Image 1 (cartoon, rainbow, N blue to C red):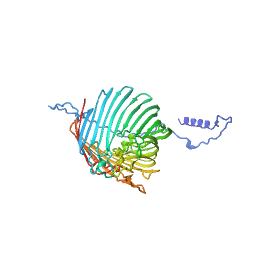
Image 2: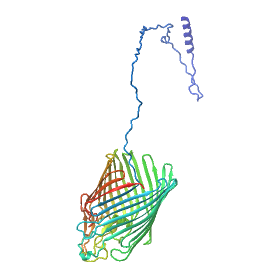
Image 3: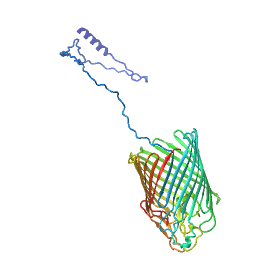
Length: 574
């Protein structure tokens, strides 16, 4: 064996002593020959043991364990019953009724009546009518003229539902009675007997809308309105707004169109017996491109108008931005919002009478060019039940309307042609106004039964021609809370309005400076509550101006103090 090993080792030594040839790079034509002599060492040789010794551990034998079970029969009389699921006791489901009648009565001889009736098949059609009446005989102390008011309205509708489209027709009438009771002078009885202070606004309208479900033509709305008053003033308005929409991938392209015609006249102006006429035709288009992403929503649009003053035979083109964006930085917690928008506002006699029912029927009707409103802010949630929303803005408006008191034509001893000429009515003037504004809102859903909301608006006005932004408060704020459980419900709303300014000119008095009057700030607290006797019957109560403040929203027009009203509501099905 030893000889065999030596012979093998010798053959290996001789074989490796020969030179080797190696090609380093096959891409080249040259060859490199490496020659290295082999120098054997003693350590290169080793001996392999043919029979290695192995240490074996001592094997431990396991002890065999034996065991057995002793089975002893036991007699039992227990019989298990089958398991049953534990039922959850549910409160009875509230029944919903489709119709109701509500009636109430309060101090100052104030009846209230409401009724909503409708019938039809909810799958195909619906026909309904709404009736509302609220009035008061008045009773404010130390007034010389009647301060009663009344508001009666009847609206009807018919809806038709189809697989591909829905359409609806609306019609209604409204009558609102007010009185020009805000006089400043002390009238003689003979003069008072010649004044008929009533002003009655009448509104008749008919309109409708159609909605298409699977079409680029999404639908249109149309309305025809006739508004008139107790002094033979009359206003006619026709408005139609079609809408188109084209989806492109995840984005949307839509466009709204507008045809708006306003025509009206007043039988007289404030200084002469000449009539006042106005007529406007506005044609508009509002294209928008909406970009929708997971955390980003952007609307790129514009508002374009071609406006024609038909009475003065002038035409003008208007263009406004309509760009808005919202970015979710933290989902539902912090969302940034920003935008720049503008619009052409068509002012009307009906809108002015809604904002201030004591305007004189001698108004100068013009359009407001709202050139832009740029804003930025944030909204989201501070907690799962606390939401917030705030923004700052800057607005530039040309021909912004401002209410200003008409000068009086009597000191209480002279007759007037019309009841609104005794320093107890308001005109509309226009000025270019820039507004720096702040809006803040917070909502708290404390529980399923209680919620709270607070808002604040601050506006700093800069006028171009007028000394003040007449009858516009800088600060308004509201705080409201609502509570409801199974049987009881209650609510409260506190409204605050800052001081306003107006010009009050006494009859026959010539002032070197402008006689500016300051109308004080005020707070108005309104409370409501009730008890639910059943699904059908509910009792309610309302307290308006609960603080009893004798404030004036407009100069010389004091509101009624504490007003209490209570009634019942009955629900039923036809």
